[in-house]
Image 1 (cartoon, rainbow, N blue to C red):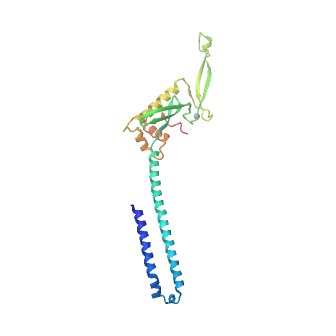
Image 2 (cartoon, rainbow, N blue to C red):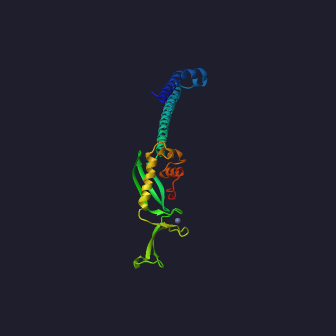
Image 3 (spheres, rainbow, N blue to C red):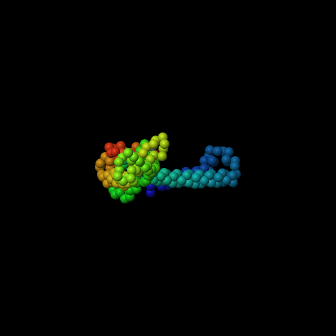
Length: 241
Ligand SMILES: [Zn+2]
């Protein structure tokens, strides 16, 4: 029996006691203290008594009912609080890290999924973004004439220059586009996330990064903390816009 049940029983006993006292003593009290009631017929007296009994029964029922619903509400509140604490705990962890890796003046956005201390899946998306304005860059190719440069074979007089070109004309950034950049970015990103997830007790270890996050712990906020710790030219945050 918990505290609420005990209170309920005491309340019931108290009400019953009061009821019995009044039920037994009321006619005497009326007779003794109210001469007016003496002039009333026994029938009226009986009715008054019945009304009082009904009133007490009603009051007892109402009290018990409100007491019961109050204790039910209290239980719910406790449940809700426990629930909230659990949700808070869940928010304080991530199983994904989203990061930006800069390779030769282009920024690649990667998503890494992991379980416990093992990186499961890494995906670096194409195309890369402009490191200045973070827009996705276009593939461009230009023919460059090698006029004036002596060459024995005519077809070699032109070369193709491949670029990542920012579509934002106000920005105008471009960078050299070469095969292998995507896989380099992927390899770098996987390495960084492995460093975070598979290490323990280091400044850049996942639990320390989560601790450092001021606000909501998200796949991005963990990486932002990592980028502030790491002095590495490839670690960037220029893909979150
Ligand atoms: Zn740009």
